[in-house]
Amino acid sequence: MPGLDRRRFLSGLGAAAAVASVATPGAARAADPILDGRPLVRYPEKTDLILLTSRPAQLETPMRYFDRALTRNDAFFVRYHTFPTPSSVDLGAWRLRVGGRVDRPLELSLDELRTKFPRVALTAVAQCSGNSRGRFTPRVLGGQWGDGAMGNAEWVGARLRDVLAAAGVRQGAVQVTFEGLDRPAFPTVPQFVKSLDVARAGEDPDVLIAYQMNGGELPMLNGYPVRLIVPGWYATYWVKHLTDVQVIDHVFEKFWMKPAYRIPDTACGCVEPGMAPARTVPITRMTVRSFIAAPAGGARVEVGRPTALKGIAFDGGYGIREVQVSDDGGVSWRRAQPGQDLGRYSFREWSATWTPPRPGRHRLMVRALNGIGESQGYEALWNPAGYLRNVIESIEVQAG
Image 1: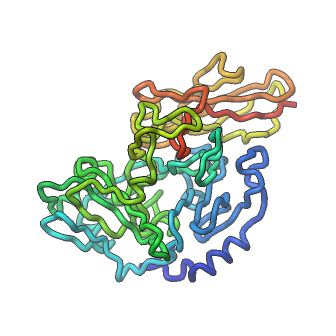
Image 2 (image 1 turned 180 degrees about the vertical axis):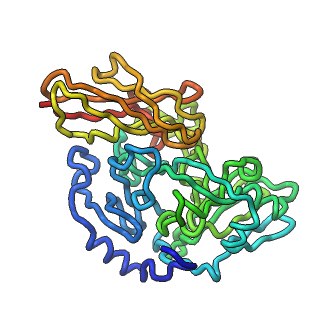
Image 3 (image 1 turned 90 degrees about the vertical axis):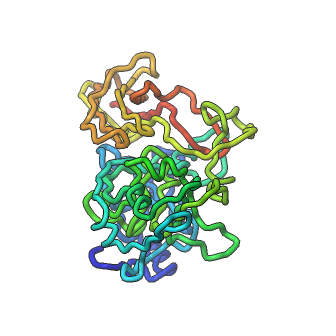
């Protein structure tokens, strides 16, 4: 939406419910038992997305949008932690506040953020920590996402380190906290606040305060007017509608850092299924993942005729070195053709051609290797929060 504010984005909770109720109905993906029967809904600035919950808004991207490296803004997934969802921002009043242990507290308008700091572009994947949680066995609590709680975009903004340098971080600073406009309606619900160590926040040139997404404004539901970009890490750190940055002299351990968003303190971030970890640590870097986006699971293909396979692969910042596909249960693998390299934090497109040799059901598998040799396993690892899934993914198609 052009202009200086988005006052008419939604008129509030009632409008949000109305939007969902008139959205396009239908099964999200009949071949997928996790998504089967979930409606497709259309919110402002969004195409038909798979509804997980409406309070708070959690909308999943259908797999067909992942046959390309960049995810359309209107198809980009939505994940909120509290309700109500922000529905408007008055840029005349909005400011990005930077305070705490700094020499020069700042209150920056959007124009000042755009003009006072170097403009930086970075292509990076945002992925919900619980993406694919619905596929965990044994089942775990939390939103039962399929595989579409992820997206890739070119983000443009100011480096967080430049903004912090302008404020002057004082000696003794330990972490930086981030809070947005998505604040809960009830005082018993903890506000969504995340933190980064000063080393990551104040030194990493790739951590951005983004005001542009794929060449346009951020959609309201993806964090307008600005959001934090922490490339390579799960999107729990990518605070939307960012408005408050505080430098602190201690480790921040309120709800959304502890006990929420924790993984077992083990090398794999996993424990035996059904077990509780002895110790936990905050979730951070994303695992290696790859998906087949086309053909869709359950599709019919012709025997003896080449079928185009397409999809994406990504990891937590080492970059994808190779993608492989298999049609014989993983007995043999062959290389797929990689697409353009948009950077180490980006989706990497891949493509291959497969010819069904006989009628019947066929299982197609994909795996990726990143720049340090990490890949995906045949068996999914488990943890009680449903995080870090990176098993070899597959689809079934029918040849006839």
